[in-house]
Length: 114
Length: 113
Image (cartoon, rainbow over all chains, first blue to last red; front, top):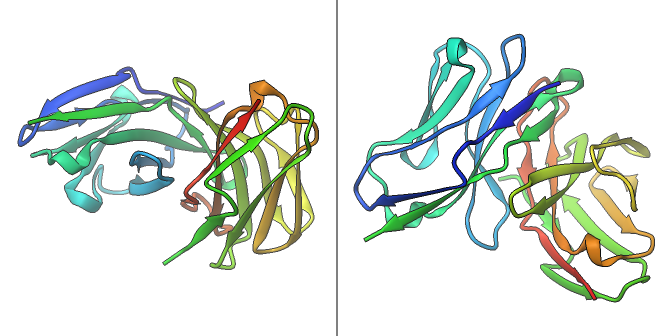
């Protein structure tokens, strides 16, 4: 069965600094991978997704993620963090028939310091 | 834009009450989902519906049931609420296609006292 690990519970980054959030998945074939963001008190918003093709995926709000099959990873990156990026970030992998269900990681909470 | 709405943002109920959480989507999506979100546990799937009147148990269905009488509406029912069901509940919908992305509602924070 598919699973997702986000090893960092909290990360603090200075405003303007670069960001990398880690995600490792478990699945034998090419996975369907997603990153979602949840601002305080809100639902989840899709940042980006990977199905196939180019392993570097661009998303909204200046985020990108790189799929590395050899490392079973799908890390999220942003070159310069803004205070408004403070939120919780979830990595997910498609599961079930047609990969229509999602299995989520436990999330990483990003804190942005001035 | 896809819109998923949930009937309440905050709800307080007493132990033993029957609780209904409603979710409506406006994009004609076939699939709808109910998740529970708890700190340190991420999102866990309670139930999944892939068509009207069709449902499938998720990872934690115990203590919950669902109803989908119309395509746009998916209800989560707590037959007899308990304190361990205090949580954030998130509804989502997606089109029926391989790897279809899910769109989430704002969530309902349920407190059972």
